[in-house]
Image (cartoon, rainbow, N blue to C red; front, top):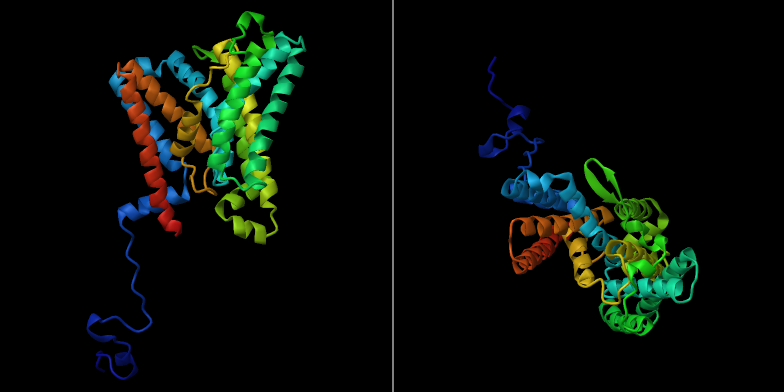
Length: 354
C-alpha cells in the first residue's frame, strides 16, 4: 500500500508550507525590549529596585568599604526620612492624578504652631503636637475643597496655598527660631538614637518605616485605597461605579496634611529646633522620590514602597557623590537626569496598557 497522502489525507496539506489544516503557527516570542517594557508595566517596583541595587554596587566600587559601613548606611536613612515621609503624602495626591506643591509649607506650619503652643502658651507637649496635626488636617482640607468644590486644578490650588501657608508660618513665628533647649523632650524624641548593628539609629527612622507599612496596607488592603486608585485611573469610571470621587479627593488631601504634620514632628527631632525656614527643597525632593519610585504622574498607578525606594535612591546618590568628592551642582544634575529618565520610562511603559 502506498504511504503517500491521498484523498482526505491529501486535503490536509496546506500548500507549499506543508502545514496541515488545523495546525497553528507558534507565536514568536516578543523582542527583548518589549519583554522589558511589559515587565516594568506589570511590576512597577522592579525598575527602582534595580536602580537602587546598581547605585549601591557602583558607589561601593568607587568608594570602597567605607560606603557600606553601618554608620554611613544609617546616615543615608536619617537623611531621607523627611523626604520619604512627605513623599508618602505626595504619593497619595499623585495617585489621584494631582500634585501638591504645599506639602513642605504644611509641614513647617505645623511645627511652628505646635512649638508656639508648647513654648509660649505652655500647653502640654502631647496637646501641642495634636494641635499641629489638626492644623495639618485643616490645611489639607483647604487644598481638597479648592480642588473638589471650586474645581481649581491641583497644581494651581496648591501653588496658591504654598504661599498662603508660608506667609502664615512667618506671621506665627515672627520669623524667629525656637531653640531645642526650650522645646519639650517629646518634640525631640524622633531624633534620639540607639545603638544597633554598629550604627546609631534614630527612633524617627523606625517610625518612618512603620508609617510606610501602614500606608502600604491602607492603599492595598482597604476599600478606601482601592477608591484612590480607581479615582486616579478613571474618574468618570469611578463615578459610574458609585464612588464619590469628590469625597475621596478631599480625604486624600486631608490625609496628606496629617502625614505632613507627622513629617514635621520628625523634622523637629532631626534638626533639633523649630525654624520657619526649615524644609527647603522638600517639595521637589518629595516629587522626585515619588517619580523615581515609579508612581505615574497620570494617576492610578504606583505604590508607597516605590516612594521609599525613590527616597533611598536620592539618598544613596547624594551620599555617594558627596563621599566621592563630586560638586553639589553635579549631584543636582544627576538627580534631575534620574527624574527625566523615570518620567520617560513611565511614558514608555504606559503604551503597553494603551
